[in-house]
Amino acid sequence: MAKQISRVKKGSVCVDETAEKWTPAVWMDFVRNGPTGNRLPDFSRAGYGLEEKTIPEIKKPVFDVTHARFGAVPDDGKEDTLAIQAAIDAAAAAGGGVVSLPKGRYDIHQTKVSPYLQIRSDGIVLRGQGSGQSGTILFMGAPGDEGPVRRLGTVSAQIEARHHTALAVLGAEDGNELAAYTKDVVRGQKDIQVTDTGKFSVGQIVTIVCKDPLIDPAHPAPNKADIPVQLTTPFTLSPVQTDTFGPAVQTLSWIAGIEKIIDAHTIRLTRPARFDQPLRYTPKIFSFNGIQDVGIEHLRIESAWPGGYRHHKPFQDADGKIIRTAKEQDYLWGGIWISSAVNGWVQDVTFADMTQGIILSRSAQWTLKELTFTGQEGHAGITIGWANDNLVKKVEFHARLVHPVTLTMTASGNVITDCTTHYESKNLHSGTDMAMDFHGIFPFENLFEKMKGFYVCPGGDLSVMPHAGVRNVFWNIEAPAKITGYGEYAKDSFVQTYDYMSTSSKTPATMYEHYPQAFYIGIHRRGDRPVTLAGSTEDRDTRWMTVEGLNRPGMVVPSLYELQKQNSQATGFKRPCL
Image (cartoon, rainbow, N blue to C red; front, side, top):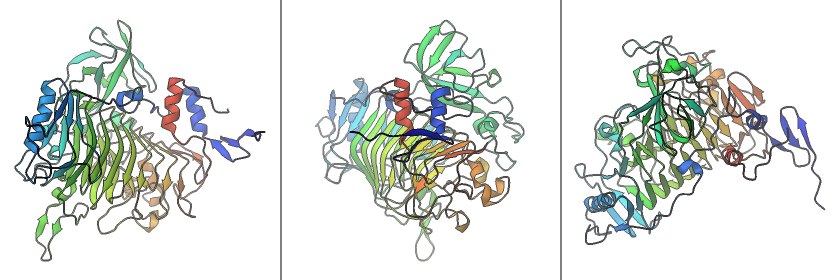
């Protein structure tokens, strides 16, 4: 006979008295009220195809890069960039298809003047035959262009040096105005009243743009900003944060889908609004003219990067001569750049000896899963900026990186789940760490969950502070046993900053203010030491944070993302005890 379980309400949570299980009150509140007010955000639509369909297994047409038509020859020591590009271009001309790379090593971009691989059309899948050392290897022999590196997404991808990666996915960046809002929208709302729905269709991808009515690009000031204030409150902006309220954020855009056309003046979007959008922001809807349905899978990207990485520092010889610039070390040994693209995927890909893995910019609804980082130390693993509703899942970090996962530049709705670091402690020489990184310009409403060996140790210069925007969620995360971070003052703190002087107390005690309105649910730690938040191990609910189950095992909701998907699809979902 099954053992009877007594489920009762204790304080703010439901507790299984027999097994000491508990369900977060914030989840029950979300079930009752949805993503309204300052409640939990909705992450159920992140990933390829809004996670309503699986990543397709495209069969044909097939463009084999080793075919005589293209002429790539693996393992011959000769550059294969032009041959592989010819196969990509042939697939584009055919309206899409599989660019097949049989096993072996393909040498690409072997000198600084040789070309890079680029995908610029819909429906192209670059498919290897395995991400191991005996599978398909794209070997990048030289670093990218030494051109300008700008704040991610603030300039066209065509002139950003970081797009010179082993492989770049580049969509068109323009768009045509389709309609304007005719009524204010509040957070949690999906139905939007617009001037006319005649230019919309169900399933269409669009870009929504809001403009801050207060920002003066010529004379930015902290008391002349509207959108940045809404998305960082209760953090108080100060004059040093010039980019946070400057021209780079005068317009805020994100990508969405049309779920339904209700009538001649009302559309329904695929996911709820993430912040209030009053008419004073002049919200407009534009066509998305980038590319769709691009896949990169089952291969290994390696480089000739020789190592010796130090964060934002050049590599010097014994006499102090610069052998490799800081820019090269940080940004120019990159694996994949993705810009202006939706509904794509990167799966079963290994990055070996790369200082920059994947950058996702001005894109949405990508799934990045089953990835591995290995080899030399480097700068960043996965970086997401000006991009929304993407899914990063099952990533193994063996190579030490400064920023294994970075969110920056108004990134929103992204889900990072089930990732693991396989190393311990910060390397004070190279700067590499086990960091969930928020890098400024208020990335908001993102989810980190089921992470093993991570804590929040962010970056970004003073002009882009605070590190994060509102309502980021940290759910069921195992912090490392040893937290080095920004010094002894922060040794047990789950969230940290070097910029505590910009917080209300000007001390480490208020480091948490760089993550306004954040949710910390089920945070625990390896080993015997507890993890702290704001110097405390107590649960609490304040205007700055919601903390439940700190250092407490037994949470019955291991994945917020999965449960929200079940809830939204009404498939086998059981309401928690109330």
